[in-house]
Image 1 (cartoon, rainbow, N blue to C red):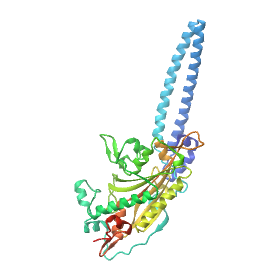
Image 2 (cartoon, rainbow, N blue to C red; image 1 turned 90 degrees about the vertical axis):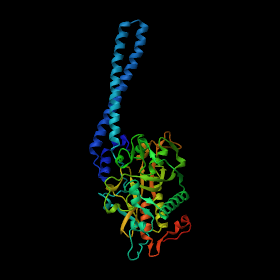
Image 3 (cartoon, one colour; image 1 turned 135 degrees about the vertical axis):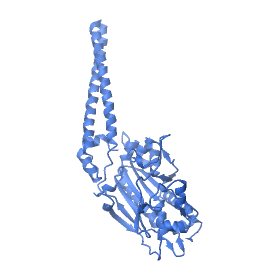
Length: 425
């Protein structure tokens, strides 16, 4: 959430920066400035009236000692009028404050200077590539056909039980899921991340804290009885561990990881790009989250990008890293890098990770601060998160890229997690 005083002091900068995200902020910014100034005027008026009332109260005491009751009564009548005026000002102040808060949450995070301009995915910048493109055997199949052939995933059974986008993993399909989860968690722990197991349901305050609410409520599954939301990513509960918390600056960065199921309505998703595992309503993911010092959060971002890169390299998958343009960025992000792996049978790139620095945007909503020696007041921290990794498209790429006439070869790093199995026949 953008700071109101920052908006007031830098209106044209905010408008210019958000234009990079294809967001026209002028009307909101101008209204914020108008209300912010009026709020200050109202506050000053109320303080002036309170000072006058205090002065009259002291004067009443002196008049009573002098026995001048006529003037005492006049002074008391004046204090009654002042109290009513103060009450009116305070009511107006509260209404302005509420309107400012409603406008404030409509403004996205400002993009970092590295963010390229652009309308959408076609304008993202490729910053790195790696891995070797596989040469598939004749008659190579997409992952949804392989999943059926090897009895790994039953998409129709998922439709029967729940609906489209809720597959059932069976046998080695389920074991591959578990193997990847354990591999990703083990790697994260070795890289200094503390593992936590968060709830899958969060309240409104948690959704607001990380920016899912009010921006993405239509994409989240909602239980209206208890007013709870199924998490779209473990980022939400894990980052909210630090809501309303003051951490010690010497402990930064704080690195946390979690596995969770993720739930997304993905309203309007249809067509060939959502076949099989390409887009699901429920999927598994391991998330990494960092709370960082503002001066070092981009060091943390680079560390997270490099870490995710090691994961796709260890899985032996061809990949590329994209720096997202303004038009393809999320509401909350200041800078995002996407990882895509090559789906050989589909002959297309599949996104498997987004790694983002939110700077102070989430932390301001969360009231997440840190205490640093030599500073009188706690300061707002920076937050970052990344998928490390999302499983469905990783599984799709493994099935397609590792298929052979003899069966599906298991990536070497997963063999110990599958009881020594090197090929699925």
